[in-house]
Image (cartoon, rainbow, N blue to C red):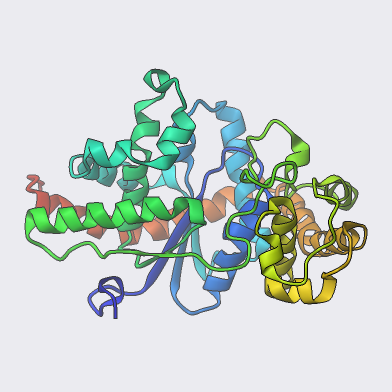
Amino acid sequence: MTEATAPKFKPRIFSGIQPSGGLTLGNYLGALKRFVEKQEEGIETIYCLVDLHAITVWQDPDKLRDNTREAAATFLAAGIDPKRSILFNQSQVAAHAELAWVLNCVARMGWMNRMTQWKDKAGKNRENASVGLFAYPTLMAADILLYHATHVPVGEDQKQHVELTRDIATKFNHDYGVDFFPLPEPVIEGAATRVMSLRDGTKKMSKSDPSDQSRINLTDDPDTIAQKIRKARTDPEPLPESLDGLKDRPEARNLVNIYAALADTTPQSVLDRFGGQGFGVFKPALAELVVEKISPISAEAKRLMADTAEIDRILGEGAQRAEAIAQPILQRAYDIVGFVRSRRA
C-alpha cells in the first residue's frame, strides 16, 4: 500500500481539462474516456474545467465563457454523470487560488524552471510570459491537494506536474511536521494516452495547432472526420505484424494506437487484424470506428449547448459540492501555516 492510498486518505480522483478551445480526439482518449471509466469504479471522482489555468495566456472573455460551457457539455455528452461525479469550473471555487498562494511559498524556483511545459510554452521569449504561466504547476498542485486527491488520471505529458505535486506535498508536510497532504499517484492507462497530430506523428494533437487537419475535433461531423482520417499523414509501407515494426513509424503508430484505444483493445490486436495490409484498407476502417464513437458525443454536446442555463446550473451545483470538500482542507492548511482567523458563527 502506497502513502497516497493509506487509510488516512479516502481514495479520491481529481483531474481537469483547460477550456481554452474545442476539445479534440486527444482530449477524449487521453482524458474524457478514462474519466468516464473511473466513474464506474466506485471511487469518488472530481472533474474540473480549469479556467484559471486557461488565462495564463490571454483569452477573449466571451469566448472563454463559451468554451467552458462547450467543454462542460462535452463532458456530459461523453458520459460524465453530474450526480455520480462532481463537475465544475475552477474559478467558482476560490479555494483553488487561495491554496495556490500557500503552495507558491512552498515550491522552489529551481523546481519550476525545470518544468518541461514551462520551457515549451514560454519558448525563447520567456521575459514576456505571464507569471501565471510560470506558476501554473503550483496551481495544478493546489487543484489536486485541495481535495486530498489520491489518484490523478493524466496523459504522459502531465506526469511531471503530478510528480511536482508530490514534491510540494512532501515539503509542506516536512516543513510543518504534519502528515496532512497525500502524495497523489498519476494514473496513466490506455493505448493512446498521448494522441499525436494527424499531420506530424512526432507532435501532440493540439487544439492550438494552426492546421485543423491535424486533429479530430469532438464537434466534427462524420464527413469531416472521415476526410481527416483519409488525409492523415502516413508512409507507403503496409502495417507491420508486430509492434516492433512501428518503432520508427510515428504516424502509423499513432493511427494504430487511436484504433486500439477506441476499440478497447491492444495495439497488437489491431496489427493481428490489419498487419500486412496497406492504409487503403486500414484508414476506412479507422474512420468508421472514429465516426461510430465520436459522432454521438458531438450530437449530444450540440443538443446540450442549446440550454446553457442548464449547463450553468450543473456547474454551479458541482462547485457547491466541490467547495464543501475543499473548504475544510483549506482552513486546516491555514491553521497549519499559522494564519490568525476569526471563528465566525
